[in-house]
Image (cartoon, rainbow, N blue to C red; front, side, top):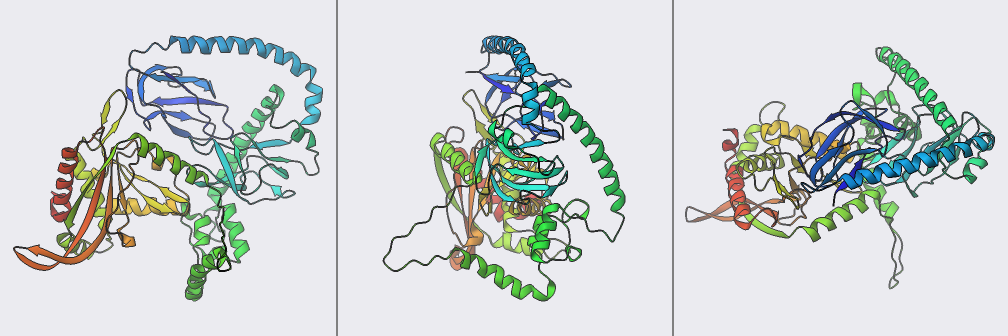
Length: 543
């Protein structure tokens, strides 16, 4: 059945969006995860991906056109499917809405005085933002402001946990924090009342009793004026910030980094920033240890978590602890369950001789400023093998099998809350050192919760490596919409037979999990043979 795709709300203040460019045209095949269009919001131009598979039947907003959030953006369905009924149904709803709007206008005029008393001037209701394209609810991880605190535009209000990462959420309003609607650790749907900001001492009981009701047209116009003024103020701040950058005496840091530094008693001038233009961010402060206290800090950092999680349980007693599922954990559970129970998995394992790979890596790393890992070599070998076996570099849809002729390898990275898969785009075109640099950068962002949604999109194949944990062999669940994932084990020193003689060798086992809908057993086996050849003879990857 055809699906209506509506204009998404890609920022918390977005009310309408402009289609900057369409990356698909009517008649194109669409797979889940494909980028449909670039949409210009009130803050940035962002890629918008499809959550449906099929054929693009209709485009409702042309390039350069602007439409309200929830307007019909496109329709995806089966090739040749009649979608006019959906558009007619949408039109009839709009007619009904127009009629009801007139009634609402009359009601608004009658209740204008009452509304003005419920929402005082200069008071702003801050709602739970949609910080990722698939986010339906968010969890407040930490409040960085408390009721009564002064809030400036640009201050970080809270850290909000989405289905993909924990992100800083900044205020777009200035005033006093009058009310917090969602406490730390609590979850709420997008658009729920998160907080209220306004002049100190303002009574907001009227707003709270009215719930998170929509703003009136008068309020909307007022907010538009505020946003217009905000844009001018932001531009002015940007200019002043640029000029201030040249002042070597000033330390540039995010509000969250400043707060953490203050709490820990860290002098920000001693911290090296990893953000844009050397800006100090949260992760820089959390990972900072003064040179003279490295050993002490490392020891306490290692021991503290153990002390915090230990619970005394008398011998013989039953004790259980309930740990609330994070948004990331819920998403991981949902997607892996969907993959495991919809894609027929099967597994192929081979053992690879790593002697030549070890010698080649040693030689490469002897070069100045060069550092290549075995995982980098595996990722490169996978990319090259995928070019020779494109059937493995595919994805399943009900209508067709999509064969990808570009190679984007996703690399599984373990983080505190679960697992994320950042993507190295056009992996086959990169050198070993470029792949290594990309993976290191993406993994660092993942662990510091700075990974952007677009950096986790578009993979055509995935590599998961547990060799560094001493795991010799394991199987993985396919990261859909990919058709395969490679599980990489540890390099083991063991007796092997060479030229009829038993000698000491180094081997590594890799297991390919395949979706039998797209990759047959023989196809998967041929891919592994090519992969084995590349890994055992690294020089061939340079040809």
